[in-house]
Length: 310
Ligand code: NDP
Ligand code: OXD
Image (cartoon, rainbow, N blue to C red; front, side, top):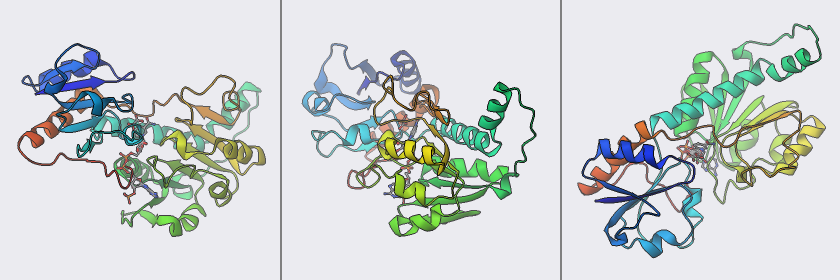
């Protein structure tokens, strides 16, 4: 059994160590190492060059994404045919995403940007801030990460809404779904958190039309994908005051180009696509468990659906 690894964003040494510990019988090799490509049955990858998986590895049994999102794979028109693509679902990636969501929700909820501005200007002014039950947070995307974020926000007492593609029922959360449910979802949301995958249906979904349906002065947090956001519309909504602030982890072009208007916008917080990262010490076991399922003739867990795009 051989696994090939490819990523410019994850540590090969780390993953190799933890894969070896979890499966001593699994030979692991880096994409650029010499070896027999026909022996490779599994690929663990982040943004492999388009066309290469199919061209090089004729005997693949599964492609494991190093990220929860699989848009970096499904965008490849020349993928191996009939090989399952497995999303990265591992507890520490989920935990990191939840940490990010809670951090930035609380930051807006407690008006930290305004307090920091006051400090810079030497102003002592005790802002009145409501407590969590009087603040409605809305999450777009009620999958693994959206639901874990809701769990922690719920423990903090926030009023919660959610939006997904198919209908959901989550205790303590007002759930909406589909394009027909979007307006009702947005109407009351003061802090909008986007945790959607990037698909044909979600392309540019964070646009003026959506911002206009939020209460005036709402906040946006996007940790899904850059392709979900219309960046000119975000700037216009910030300019008009329809959005009071935006925290963005993902961008249409990454790294965010020098000179982009987001860089020094006073109401934009930028993080460099590091909201959550799969941890080798935790994720390797998940990958190996799926490899064992495949070896036992079962289907791996967390297969992406190419038709749905996630
Ligand atoms: P899941 O596949 O578990 O959940 C996706 C959710 O999005 C589901 O609730 C799904 O609806 C919903 N959805 C998909 N398409 C639509 C649509 N057209 N309209 C409404 N809802 C839709 O994904 P995860 O929670 O694991 O991850 C979500 C995304 O987070 C990833 O795809 C990735 O882009 C991003 N991410 C970003 C990271 C970062 O560091 N910035 C790190 C990790 C992930 P339904 O429930 O009905 O299927
Ligand atoms: C992911 C990511 O999808 O890191 O996991 O963006």
